[in-house]
Length: 118
Length: 109
Image 1: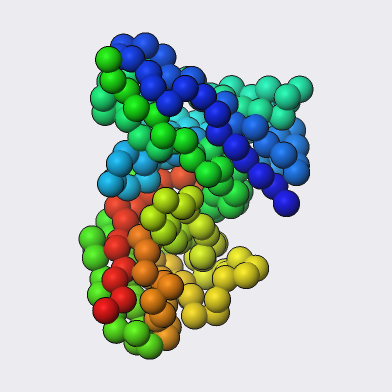
Image 2: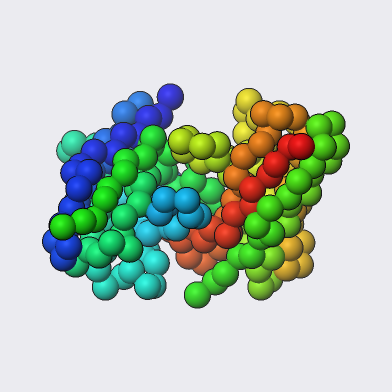
């Protein structure tokens, strides 16, 4: 059974960089069939897709976040990462990592709350 | 950017049918899926590729997608179905893009 687990600081100061890692177990991120993505959910609000990356290097980002976001894969550690630069309070959210399949995000991590505050 | 619109809330009596709509331009040309999210939990796929049910998901959940609207139907609604539901669209031309709907709170009265 595939499992994903987010890790990283729970508190980030503006305008620093938010950095999270997703560790995948029970399967390999080196499969060319999937995308590996990040989604966030501000407290009390809806889901927002941030971006996704495939093992072959194809990368997609939400247009409004593209200038501040980078997703990368580390197959040697079976991990992928998210960086969000120049954070503000609006970036406070639960951040989820997930596996992207044909049409849906079929496996999700449990999520990690990141608060942006000085 | 592509947008998906859902009703903010749907109320249903136990045992009745709940219908949640998701509207987007030419949504029927894309794959639609549906997630159930309960408080403090990660989203869970209940319908994928318009109308398919993952293993372990009750057959009370069904989906359709045509024209500009995808629909999630919950038959014989139970109290455990009370949750937030999100639609999501996927287009084969941009395979790494997953667009979420605005979300619908389903309340079982």
